[in-house]
Image: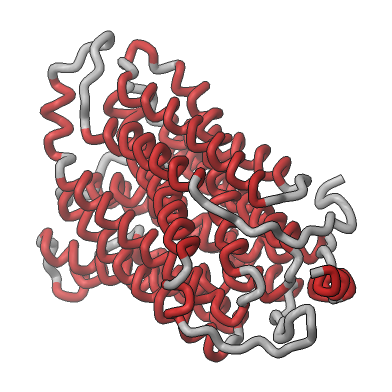
Length: 458
């Protein structure tokens, strides 16, 4: 054991990364993050605003999630076999940039066939949603799995994940700033005006995200970690290897529940603040912005910590407990107490940062030095994430028609248990409870840690 520890300390791959390497890596997911924020926050609202039913909107989202889920599996396996992380990242980014504007725009098949039928619109939007998510998945898997092939240093891996999460907050804040301006400067009354609103949001988001993709590719080299700290070449790991590890199932479940918490709550936030709490239209942008400002601050703070398996579990559990409290408050809160939502948004932001950074970092602890199988791990876990989120959103949104009926008898001092309350409050709280219980049962191996060369931010 002592010989191994000395070898690790002397290995260049185990040396902690400097700030610029971490920063260049961190911006690489900005295009995915800013388009995903728009996808989960505004897709269901957009589809229903242009006249389609909630079930049709749910079908569009489910088609994208299914395409995303299966692509992560294939992309993970192919990346493990052939490598070339940056080529996968670039190709996926191009596909995202090209297709995303059609997700939030006019129905192209409707223009081609000269029909505005609900079925044709659903098919048209579902197709581009699927194409967008294929590109999104390729970019996500290549970027996430790249961490383990850049460095063996456990602290650097967590710091890179935290930096990535911090820039995810920047991406989300950028989106909500854009949306806030568009909704204020360009009010909409007709379907055409609604489409123009979201088209401007989509185009601006794509431009910002692509700028950061270019920075990532200029500043980050292709990972070359092909040997372990002993100088032995890494061997390709069969996917069956992971299925024999109990920790794989625990990490998979925790990651899936983490994504359910963040994505389902984000999808129903706009419906909740507008329909249930009867807040101003601008809160569709301001409340999410407060959540992500809070998350950004916490993500920055997390980068300065030295991480152990125990600390990961503690921080995740704290985030989960905060979500249980917030979810319960959201589920029962009457509209005359709507101002509490501003405080809850800050707490939700803290909770999201804690569970996201630690939940994703658990995957790095699972992978360890088995870097030749890391893309399969990220791909398979992302598959569970996409499929579970897609099914959950489809089921909840399918009952959204009853939301209007439920709210007609609602009074300011009496909570009405609409679908929005279940999606934004109850579902995340239950997922957080289960995730905390599973986290407490994990046995994370003691990592080989070295501190950062320099603080990421001075």
